[in-house]
Length: 249
Ligand SMILES: C[S@@+](CC[C@H](N)C(=O)[O-])C[C@H]1O[C@@H](n2cnc3c(N)ncnc32)[C@H](O)[C@@H]1O
Image (cartoon, rainbow, N blue to C red):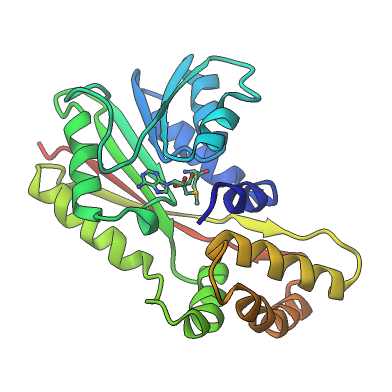
């Protein structure tokens, strides 16, 4: 995934329910970290509520864009990755990480880092991980149409959350709850042919960027998107599973 790919995708994303859930989950926290902040929509929502939020993001152009549009509160942005969080131990009382686990090089290491920087003795201590949920329409397109062309492994978010839960439990975060949110990516164009072409380009750029088979992937997506838009004309679902882990008593 490239920074441009995420930016092109994020502007079409409607995720009010997801943002509302992150705001309510962090309402009682004081020091919150957003791991892989992207363009900063969530971090800004948290900062607007709590006065501040810290974000880590590896792509430099996204680090800059996180600051853009901050109107209420402060977002402190750091360049860095989930695998090497640039903070001392126990710096935060809540850490969340949305739609980033598929991109980390070592999920066990990344989750262990989130645990390291989260103080388990705070009253509202929690780690929140957001990934694709069951019935996710985008992941179905990715796995059924793109993966066979790209000859890459299936994108399996259930496996990512299950692995993360195992690591969290090993470190004492044994109080789990699982939630579901609905989001979708919107294509407002009037003509279906135009929407198919736009969606194929946006999704190819988001998932595969400069991949050598990007043109082939885009062509493979077009008939699948035409079938999808025949049923759901202007949206593709991005349903999430939200795992909340708190220290066990
Ligand atoms: C799909 S976007 C999600 C952005 C944001 N969390 C959100 O939900 O709006 C994935 C983000 O993960 C970031 N990313 C990729 N590899 C990462 C890593 N190893 N550690 C932290 N973030 C990473 C990307 O730069 C991108 O901003």
